[in-house]
Length: 373
Image (cartoon, rainbow, N blue to C red):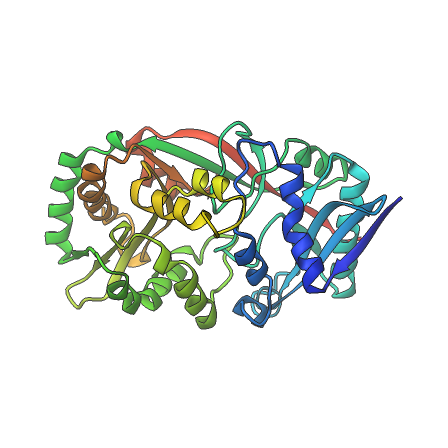
């Protein structure tokens, strides 16, 4: 007998966060979250995403044991302003029992039906800064701190329940040595002169913070045409500053400005924290923080988190300035591999951005869709 209960108390939310630790306990590719941070992320008093969204946390039980979880998410901005009647679901994890998946997604369907929504899509988060997609290929590659990992049967469960592919995402990686430093230095020099642009490098986080709001303006302008785009509020930007910017190596953040010092392009890259997070086992203390700090300083793999070029400067070679700056930063550090976050398979412009680096596609993921019944 499977029962589904909405998690509301602090204890239940913690159980919700801890559940994946049980089904991935011995998996060498799963990257755990920091438990404390994940709990805070789900707290409406701490995370401003709840100003424009609501979430219902469901846990599935079998013989009094938790066997699955899911969040049913409604992004009200998406529904009222963008007129997209989507019921989202995310943070989806289950044992290999399709009845558990069915019971959880029935709850998502109920929430959607009660709010007169048209269809369900997931797994997705609250917005574009969250994780997305069920992994469908690449199960033997370690995950990242900004992607979900899952067992192969997740896809099978969804398809057996008549969910169909909605969007497909590709994950690629390339050797840093594939970036031709001489070529990008030459092109960068030309582009900077032609368009009167300047690259900004940083050594201190405090020097980055004044640009973050403007960075998100460029982010919104460059990503708004994507089918997945949902606006990021000022409060969410402030939350992002506090949660992430101070933790990212300042020298890994690159900006490009025009002659009026107006931001036209940016990139945020992070050291790979995957192995360090596995060592923390979800806890910063007593030793977890040292694993993360060590990775921040010594990791030889990096993850490209966000990269954006204002539409006015797209297809003009501005990305060459960014890559030129990274060759100058990464070469002395001995960076070996560059890992990219999930990118829409039909995003041709992003493919052109990376094509010179001989990228290797190592993972695929999808979101799935089903009409609300």
